[in-house]
Image (cartoon, rainbow, N blue to C red):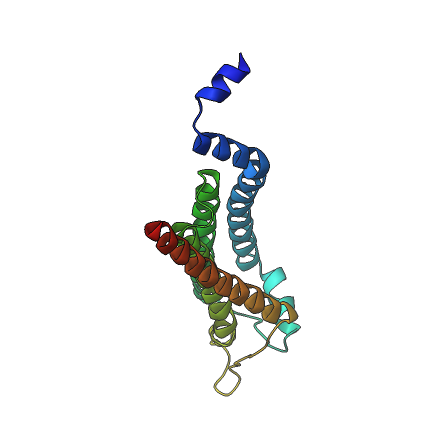
Amino acid sequence: MTDFFDSTLSLDDRRLDSLRRRIGWLCQALRFALVAYCLWVLFAIVRFWSDDALIVPRFASLKVDVEGMSDYQRLGAFGVSFVIWALLVAACYAGWRLFSGYLEGRIFTPDAAGWLRSLALMGLIAALVDIAARPLMSLILTAHKATGAHMVSVYLRPEDLSTVMLLATLLALAHIQKTAADIADEHAQIV
């Protein structure tokens, strides 16, 4: 009975079915991991900015005294973090679309390369905005201090470089994949 159904499937359908068996679990796991990651980061941002006991020591470790900040300052800093989170959500949405395309059999296609490029580009923008927003964040949180006591803290974390390098590598890979897909399309049109 199985042979009958297998013989009625086209070669493309059998290839797609085989592909889904091999990578389907991974694509599904990554899609749900992207959603979980976005929700986890949002929870962490809300939890952090709603608790002075977390904010003050974190900034004290950076030599920035934010003691006595107002709720409006925390809300402003939360707003900056929320913008960065929104960029992260855009990157994760592109990842969701990328892995959904893989599940549909679109792997080495211009479409897949475009979603990989979007994922890498939005992630890179989010990482760079995060780095650039740190001085703004410290300025917002020290705005209540006397003139001359406002702080502009500029710092890099060790993972910043690895994140930027990884996302730049994904961006380059997306460009390579797009070029390969274009060459394959040209070759298919010639044949």
